[in-house]
Image (cartoon, rainbow, N blue to C red; front, side):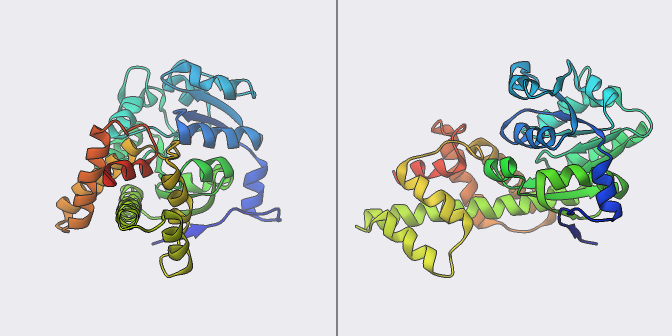
Length: 308
């Protein structure tokens, strides 16, 4: 059952009343995405407690009034609801299962929402552990990168405990433009991998098109203008194409994370018996870009490898 919800406006509804009663919120992980989402929660008036492995990354938001805890456990114990956004399955597990981790702070009724992009197995493992101690779990990876996170325009892909989705909705409404509830834990992870696989294939295709066109004597700006007037017009190309031509790879979504996601998508294809020849080929190009030192650059830096 697919349920979607857009942010509620000021109205005399149950949704609006939930907005008025703000829970205390924890946020774990102050990377590009986590810090942007936590910042929006602070600006919206939530009482926010932060944690990050490198504590200094919390300083900017601490200056805006956020509290900072020493461990994930302390955040869970102090807050009504805790969100996390980490870089990969390994870090997601470590935040939960490590010493002083989330699981150590979970007791009956505690609420944990993992917004990391992980594989289904990781999401289910974490959900099972949280629920075994009486906690509530929701996975909620997001579609969108830095700018949508900063502007509250993310698409949130929630799955798991539906009552927790309802409790988290006032926070989701601050962080995103639309929330989908996809059912059981694992569905959010699968949806996110599908979305990011399609994005990876498309940015690789754009890289090849620009490289081919330029080597064939066409202007990159003309290629982008033609694409923008036809059936291939899309926000991804309009946003990334001009920056690729300028060599501007300031990270909105780091290449190393995109390669991780397409690798996980190819792994999912293997598990369900779905051939993914184009995605597998794109993964090899992303791996080459990673080997070439582009891991911390924006995912569009794949162009540097393609055009050589």
